[in-house]
Image 1 (cartoon, rainbow, N blue to C red):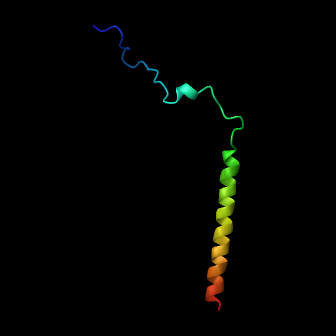
Image 2 (image 1 turned 90 degrees about the vertical axis):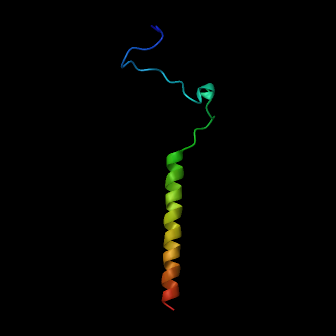
Image 3 (image 1 turned 90 degrees about the horizontal axis):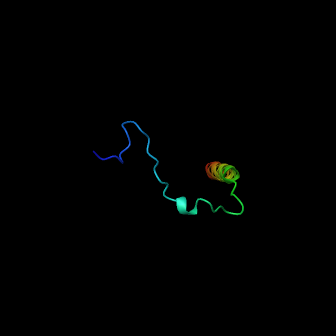
Length: 60
């Protein structure tokens, strides 16, 4: 039989797709949490302004 196959139930190591650049990192890691909070804050401001515009239009 073929001796290179793993036994039943043995886990295989799968190579990662981007392992060639795994050692390289950006000099400054981007704070994605702060970016998400900023986008949500801008969304709330936009919703607030749109709501005030609708209220203004219907209050004339």
